[in-house]
Image (cartoon, rainbow, N blue to C red; front, side):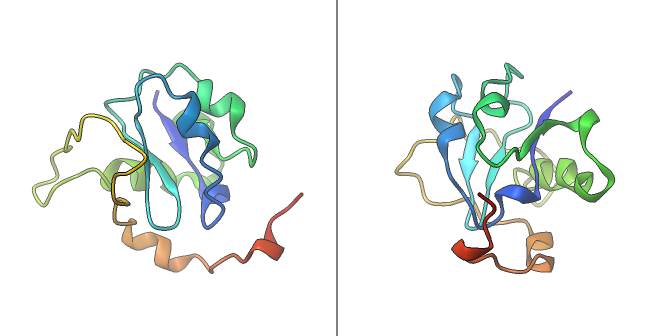
Length: 115
């Protein structure tokens, strides 16, 4: 099982999950965060701290968010489909380019966020 960040994170990007990750496997993208599928040790710390409830194990994803297992994996693949191992995210790293499927999701403004 892998931990996956779902659509609740798009344009919200709270980032508290990155502070709880002991292996720095959560990478900032342009519109959301992504969990590296092989760097993650599946400790669940990020899931327990996410304020928008965006993190789940891949076998717990509902139908609407099932595609995010693929999105979280593919964002780390090179042109040959091999997983790139960046070695851990750091706050001053440039954002990871978002997965092309994120373009299908409308932009959220701060007023769209649920309290």
